[in-house]
Image (cartoon, rainbow, N blue to C red; front, side, top):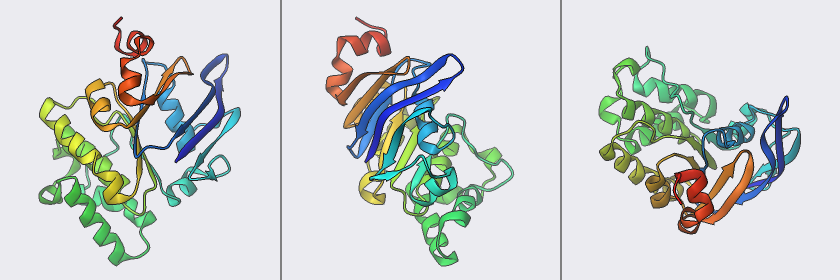
Length: 235
């Protein structure tokens, strides 16, 4: 469970987040809004890359603000980025192993976790392929695979479906819905694909210029006329 209270971020005269409150309790939660709404800023605060001027965030009752990004990873917080961070000179396997070196308790445990993650994202047969030879979907799967190493409690996904075709998006959808039960982690998903959000997210938060526009059951939120105007551009 991720709890956000009175969260405010300020860069000069701009407030990407303005007194934001909310509590993600569902296994898979959506985070949507127009460009510049504050979505990625919120993930950056949760990850420890941005320090708010006011407010608090917690994961399963543990306050995150006092913790460094490394400590947050150690306690189970995981993150992907809009631009995948795959090292082209390393194999798919070694890209995933790189995070295991910092999280897994032993070499044997690391091998098991890497194998499990690679199998889950469907890259076992591509394990020894260099990153530069992987296509966009495979690179996205590397990023998701890395989040599954160790004991993830919450995984923050920043537009994992961007640029994927319909078939790839369907495969991504099938993976996401399995993660909470198979790996015990809550997901918070940013994506501009309303169909993807609707199909996997139990509850969804909508931001608009740093403020909370709506929050609740995903279908109810997406059908809200105010949300449709702000997010979907329809009446």
